[in-house]
Length: 461
Image 1 (cartoon, rainbow, N blue to C red):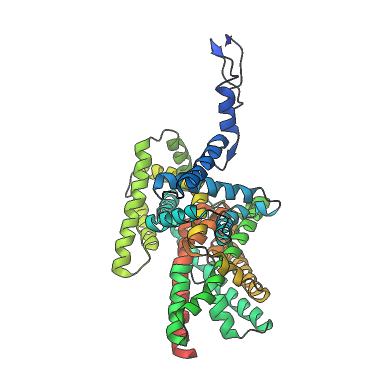
Image 2: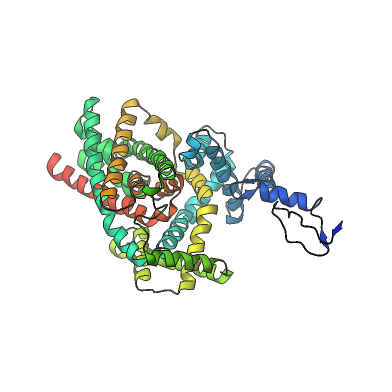
């Protein structure tokens, strides 16, 4: 049916401009388009989501396996990741407190443990995650995009000031944790080294494993036994940090003056100009600029890898320093900077939940988490993390920082390394803080582990 002059709604339900010979937008394919555009699971249109699920399970049913190649895993991780995230978002009350990130990580872990998720999907996801190290691509794109989006002055001040809330939070958290453990009948030694320290150790690879090696050598215990005691605490600390991040996000929404929505410091005039320029550039950005942003992130990560081999500094931290240096000397053009910002937004919106699903399947043992669920452990962990975050909140406020955003970084001090940072910042809806989160978990965790093992080996044993 042809319409000559009337205004109709397009398939998005929006008012369209009257055009001669405009066809009335009903029937096929417009109703199908409306279904695709108005109903989504995460970022996936509902029809494509259903088709993806059918294809995944059909492949498993027919062949008995699922290829771990990247094309198939994009579909599988996207399907399960956004499904679990959507479940978390729709939970009453806790859905607005970070439940999406928790569900995207821990539901897959539980499904694997109880044998509900088909074995071919588990094997393919685990192989893909460990072979590709996809998490590092995600983190480097998020870090570089975040740094390139910051004003130089704000960047420098943020890195200098964030150490105040971090240090004060750790001191108070350690004292509170040990004190609560003592009141519950635990010795200060066991409370600190097997509960409090693992929470602030910086995750699994940089925290739990070095701690277990150190404990095995100094305390003459089996490393497997030490890791078995430390690992669940790291994960429960990360879970508590995710919940705190979600609560802080709600506080920020209720009291907007307490948050910069991803900024640590009040925006300067230069910051405002940078944001306006980035917004204008995004509207005309082309594919090559996007590709340049991805390549910039990858190159900076390679610099971090080389730095790790030469100095021992973790590759993401080395990459972070390299990105800051490039930003401060204006080492890339504004167009490439805008490309890195678009890359950041793409990974933030489209890759986060698939990554969390892969993390839950591949490296989150549900049985270890359950084994640490005792009332005493939970009480010490919650008190430690809450005191850490609360201290960061009030110290940041005294230093002229946005307290909600600085407290989110304090949450990351209790996170499960890089994966914990992703989950916590997702729950807090402040992925822009990834550079500071990496400082908190990796550098802060390394300092905590090194100093504590040094004291343990030379003064306490």
